[in-house]
Image 1: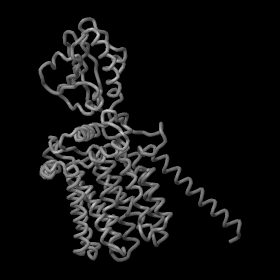
Image 2: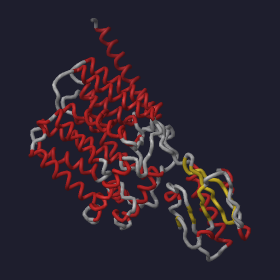
Image 3: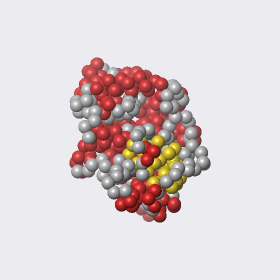
Image 4: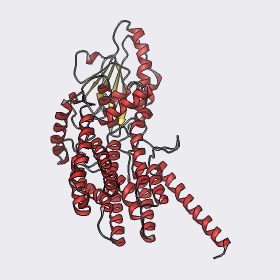
Length: 478
């Protein structure tokens, strides 16, 4: 082969890599990638209801209310503790936090997920870089890396826990790596009790594929690391010991939720589940084709498949449950499969690219908040000024009665808001009533507008127009 031919081949290879990167970047923009250029992100236009719940829990915790006092004993305090730390460093209060401020916290942990492939051993640097790039720009085949929810922290902890455990099995200093592996699992435990099931699946995978790594010394160090971090976060840095009792309540309630007897979310997006299932099946086929003895390198894929089958078997379904198997497979499984053979390397890279492309068409946004909810606060603020001039000395407040009112508490955080039935609710300057049908309520002294909070969820907004109070112009243009 002449020198010109070599230069041509190198140039074509460079163009191919550049084209692949542009392709994945473009898909990443479609897939809500956290690092997509501003203005090109296709993210839900507002704080999601679950994000607003987590904001409220973190805000109350920062204000001194014990996290364990909250009645929704389902999520752990890890996100609240991390948010308080990040906001304290930035000098930011929860009331002043914008959607971007909130989403920065989980995005920092998502960066940890994206960095995991770079720490793989016995994997070529181009493969590590490709894996990190797919995770970062392809948004891991998901759009959850920048949502203010527990999952980015849980997945970051679990991915790094598996990675560090495997490194401890082949490292010269296994003790400290085992401790940090356990600490990462402790972070996941303080996010959701579902981590207990994931740890059980991990233990089963280790027994099958890497029994030799389960030494008493390594297990002991990992347990110490997990307990210290988990108990610390679960008790909000040892200030709320009732948090351990709350974790027990969460664990007990999880059985009812998972079995479909309590607050169960049914399957609404089967296309994405098929996409993830086929992706994991493709990786399993590539592993069989590659052959070779079982080893610790098989553990990430085995855990990803196990977690997928675990959630597939249960009636509780939401795309967020697949964030862990997707990140495990993209961050750790396919880079390990891509080594040693040209065929399996090319097949793994093609499968990862096809998976990200397919997700762009099968993954749907999860009940996005409408822009109307964001405009509501501005309109009420304008109305408050007019109303208080007509009613000097009287308190201005908002009454919300019935319905699924999240994420309204976040958007109405600047006002005094009452929920449910309370004295004076029927006389509130602004009232929100759940719209169960199209019959517009006619209440003397109030003007009524229709508000869409989320897809399929509506409220009637009643504005007090007694004493000839004028409503803002924007109210009629939602």
